[in-house]
Amino acid sequence: MRRHIRAAVTVVATAFLAPLLTASPAPAAPVRHADDARKPADCRPALQVLASLPGSGGSQVKGLGPSALAVGASRGLPVYWTGTRVHRVPLPAGFTGGEVAAVNAKGLMVGSLQSAGRTAAFSFRAGARTVTLLPEGAHAADVNDQGLIVGDGAKGGALIGLEWNGARIHRRLAPPAGYALRSVTAINNAGQIAGSGEAVKDDESWSAGVTWPARKGAAAIPLQRFWPSGVPYDFWYPRDIDRAGRIVGTHDYTRLDTLTPTQWLPPYTTEREAGLLGERTSGTFEAISPTTNLSVGTALDSHMVGPFPPETAPPTQAQIWPGTGPLLALPRLSPKGDAQAHAVSDDQRVGGSAVDAASTPRAVVWTCALRQAYKP
Image 1 (cartoon, one colour):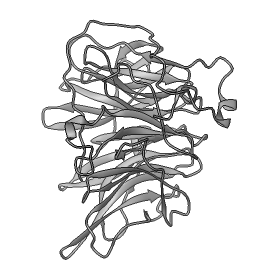
Image 2 (image 1 turned 90 degrees about the vertical axis):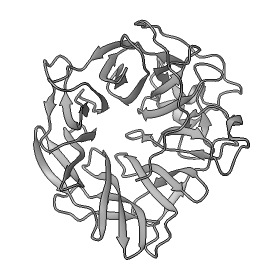
Image 3 (image 1 turned 60 degrees about the vertical axis):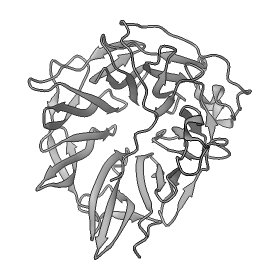
């Protein structure tokens, strides 16, 4: 699988901080949406900066739970936040790092731990003395409100998809016939799962998004569109799925080094591309809210399409899409700092990371996000 790691930043050591900061005014007036009617009465637009663990390295929010609960990583360690206060997830003996990838509405967290030559999937609840390691798991990617967890492991050198119920394997997620599994990324409250696969036949190969129906034993379904005739330039990476079965992710057109935010709607016979942010030439979708069709991700630029020279490209930008109309930008923490969005909730919180004036990636939450979103 091609993995894109762009806009690397130099980080510096900072002390333990717990501020609540508000971003500078956006370059353009915020765009109002009908979705504003669904926000809580006390919703106030702000860019909250969450505390970091001591040491060097960045922090990022990967998931949002009830109230002011957020989860992610700080300084390479799995953490969660209550408000802006950071809390470590206890590491079992032998593990040195990791991240919390997701949290459900009941506060159950899941993620992955790392040690030399090993990764392990885990679940955790605030206040517990230790994590629960998930059998055969290397990574836990998501958890729904029923407590079903999805992720992957490895067997015989091949990736295998897994769904856990508590601390036991509930089912194994076989890819569609003729495909090898490439990722398992999300599960909704109905039990429907999203991921990706890749097929190879003779000298031809192609990529497809994949969904597994909630019914145990049901066969996986490739998401259209894909190229079984052997056009190798298109790769599809579903990232999240909402309660209505809407799947969001990214289309990677490798021939031009372009990423496009993508949505698949049931019955998944085609894909819908949301466009790009302003004049940016690439972008991703990383998450969709459970019920309100808010999608978030990151805008960036292609090294082949431009701008030229590549070093003139602006920093990455967190972006949000209300399901119709253009993609909208979310404010940066510093004018020349990267910003990325990884999670979104029904109450318009968006979680991610933003680089501060000292060039350190900080874990952030945009509250009442649509009220501070703007057209660049």
